[in-house]
Image 1 (cartoon, rainbow, N blue to C red):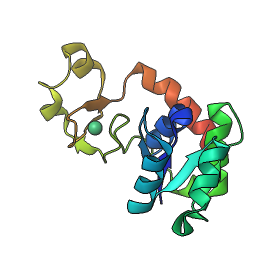
Image 2 (cartoon, rainbow, N blue to C red):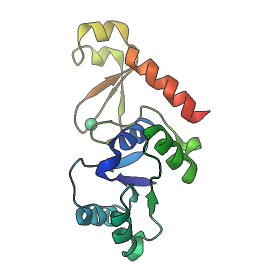
Image 3 (cartoon, helix red, strand yellow):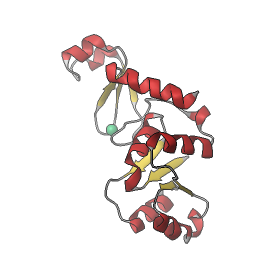
Length: 155
Ligand SMILES: [Zn+2]
Protein backbone atom coordinates (compact mmCIF):
# COMPACT_ATOMS: atom_id res chain seq x y z
CA UNK A 1 0.00 0.00 0.00
CA UNK A 2 1.50 3.29 -1.13
CA UNK A 3 0.43 6.83 -0.33
CA UNK A 4 0.82 10.36 -1.54
CA UNK A 5 0.24 13.16 0.95
CA UNK A 6 -0.80 16.70 0.09
CA UNK A 7 1.28 19.73 1.13
CA UNK A 8 -0.84 20.35 4.23
CA UNK A 9 0.02 17.08 5.95
CA UNK A 10 3.81 17.03 5.85
CA UNK A 11 4.17 15.93 9.43
CA UNK A 12 1.80 13.04 8.84
CA UNK A 13 3.86 12.01 5.80
CA UNK A 14 7.07 12.05 7.83
CA UNK A 15 5.60 9.99 10.61
CA UNK A 16 4.17 7.43 8.24
CA UNK A 17 7.63 7.08 6.72
CA UNK A 18 9.07 6.67 10.18
CA UNK A 19 6.61 3.83 10.68
CA UNK A 20 7.92 2.28 7.47
CA UNK A 21 5.24 3.23 4.95
CA UNK A 22 5.83 4.39 1.40
CA UNK A 23 4.61 8.00 1.29
CA UNK A 24 5.34 10.40 -1.53
CA UNK A 25 5.39 14.00 -0.36
CA UNK A 26 6.27 17.27 -2.05
CA UNK A 27 6.12 20.55 -0.17
CA UNK A 28 5.07 22.23 -3.43
CA UNK A 29 2.98 20.39 -5.95
CA UNK A 30 -0.23 21.42 -7.69
CA UNK A 31 -3.40 19.35 -7.55
CA UNK A 32 -3.23 18.05 -11.10
CA UNK A 33 0.35 16.93 -10.72
CA UNK A 34 -0.43 15.19 -7.45
CA UNK A 35 -3.41 13.42 -8.98
CA UNK A 36 -1.44 12.30 -12.01
CA UNK A 37 1.35 10.95 -9.78
CA UNK A 38 -1.18 9.10 -7.64
CA UNK A 39 -2.58 7.50 -10.77
CA UNK A 40 0.74 6.62 -12.30
CA UNK A 41 2.27 5.19 -9.13
CA UNK A 42 -0.98 3.74 -7.78
CA UNK A 43 -0.87 5.73 -4.59
CA UNK A 44 -3.66 6.49 -2.14
CA UNK A 45 -4.18 10.22 -1.70
CA UNK A 46 -4.11 11.54 1.87
CA UNK A 47 -5.47 15.05 1.98
CA UNK A 48 -7.18 17.72 4.05
CA UNK A 49 -8.25 19.57 0.93
CA UNK A 50 -11.86 19.06 -0.11
CA UNK A 51 -11.27 20.55 -3.54
CA UNK A 52 -8.42 18.17 -4.25
CA UNK A 53 -10.55 15.31 -3.04
CA UNK A 54 -13.39 16.25 -5.36
CA UNK A 55 -11.01 16.53 -8.30
CA UNK A 56 -9.33 13.22 -7.53
CA UNK A 57 -12.65 11.39 -7.29
CA UNK A 58 -13.49 12.47 -10.81
CA UNK A 59 -10.71 10.16 -11.95
CA UNK A 60 -12.15 6.69 -12.09
CA UNK A 61 -9.10 4.79 -10.91
CA UNK A 62 -8.82 7.06 -7.86
CA UNK A 63 -12.40 6.97 -6.66
CA UNK A 64 -11.67 4.52 -3.89
CA UNK A 65 -8.10 5.64 -3.38
CA UNK A 66 -8.51 8.77 -1.32
CA UNK A 67 -8.75 9.51 2.37
CA UNK A 68 -9.86 12.83 3.80
CA UNK A 69 -7.71 13.56 6.82
CA UNK A 70 -10.12 14.90 9.41
CA UNK A 71 -8.06 16.03 12.35
CA UNK A 72 -5.65 18.93 12.34
CA UNK A 73 -3.28 17.31 14.84
CA UNK A 74 -0.70 15.00 13.34
CA UNK A 75 -0.98 12.39 16.07
CA UNK A 76 -4.67 11.91 15.39
CA UNK A 77 -3.93 11.96 11.67
CA UNK A 78 -1.51 9.07 12.05
CA UNK A 79 -4.09 7.20 14.11
CA UNK A 80 -6.74 7.79 11.47
CA UNK A 81 -4.56 6.38 8.68
CA UNK A 82 -3.45 3.37 10.73
CA UNK A 83 -7.04 2.59 11.69
CA UNK A 84 -8.61 3.25 8.33
CA UNK A 85 -6.26 0.96 6.41
CA UNK A 86 -5.68 -1.42 9.32
CA UNK A 87 -1.97 -0.90 9.20
CA UNK A 88 -0.92 -1.49 12.80
CA UNK A 89 0.31 -5.00 12.02
CA UNK A 90 2.37 -3.71 9.12
CA UNK A 91 4.34 -1.07 10.98
CA UNK A 92 8.07 -1.46 10.47
CA UNK A 93 9.72 1.48 12.27
CA UNK A 94 12.90 3.06 10.95
CA UNK A 95 13.00 1.10 7.73
CA UNK A 96 12.52 4.05 5.39
CA UNK A 97 14.38 7.29 4.66
CA UNK A 98 12.57 10.26 6.20
CA UNK A 99 13.90 12.59 3.54
CA UNK A 100 13.41 10.73 0.28
CA UNK A 101 11.10 7.81 1.14
CA UNK A 102 13.54 5.14 -0.04
CA UNK A 103 13.93 1.83 1.85
CA UNK A 104 16.91 1.92 4.23
CA UNK A 105 19.65 -0.67 4.31
CA UNK A 106 21.20 -1.96 7.49
CA UNK A 107 24.71 -0.59 7.93
CA UNK A 108 27.22 -2.54 10.04
CA UNK A 109 28.82 -0.38 12.73
CA UNK A 110 32.28 -0.88 11.24
CA UNK A 111 31.13 0.65 7.96
CA UNK A 112 29.45 3.60 9.66
CA UNK A 113 32.70 4.84 11.16
CA UNK A 114 33.65 7.28 8.41
CA UNK A 115 30.11 8.31 7.66
CA UNK A 116 29.01 9.78 10.99
CA UNK A 117 30.55 12.18 13.54
CA UNK A 118 32.87 10.45 16.05
CA UNK A 119 30.57 11.04 19.05
CA UNK A 120 27.71 9.44 17.18
CA UNK A 121 29.88 6.48 16.30
CA UNK A 122 30.76 6.08 19.99
CA UNK A 123 27.22 6.33 21.33
CA UNK A 124 25.02 4.67 18.73
CA UNK A 125 25.05 1.02 17.85
CA UNK A 126 22.44 0.71 15.19
CA UNK A 127 22.95 2.36 11.79
CA UNK A 128 21.09 2.43 8.51
CA UNK A 129 21.97 3.87 5.14
CA UNK A 130 19.70 5.30 2.47
CA UNK A 131 20.94 3.94 -0.86
CA UNK A 132 19.16 6.74 -2.68
CA UNK A 133 20.30 9.96 -0.94
CA UNK A 134 23.22 8.54 1.04
CA UNK A 135 21.99 9.75 4.41
CA UNK A 136 22.95 7.69 7.43
CA UNK A 137 20.44 7.20 10.24
CA UNK A 138 21.23 5.98 13.70
CA UNK A 139 19.56 5.36 17.00
CA UNK A 140 20.49 8.25 19.25
CA UNK A 141 18.89 10.11 22.11
CA UNK A 142 16.27 11.92 20.03
CA UNK A 143 15.34 8.50 18.89
CA UNK A 144 14.15 7.41 22.30
CA UNK A 145 11.52 10.15 22.37
CA UNK A 146 10.35 8.97 19.00
CA UNK A 147 10.17 5.42 20.19
CA UNK A 148 7.95 6.45 23.06
CA UNK A 149 5.60 8.06 20.58
CA UNK A 150 5.78 5.03 18.34
CA UNK A 151 4.87 2.79 21.24
CA UNK A 152 1.74 4.86 21.77
CA UNK A 153 0.65 4.34 18.17
CA UNK A 154 1.24 0.63 18.41
CA UNK A 155 -0.48 -0.03 21.71
ZN1 LIG B 1 17.14 9.04 1.38
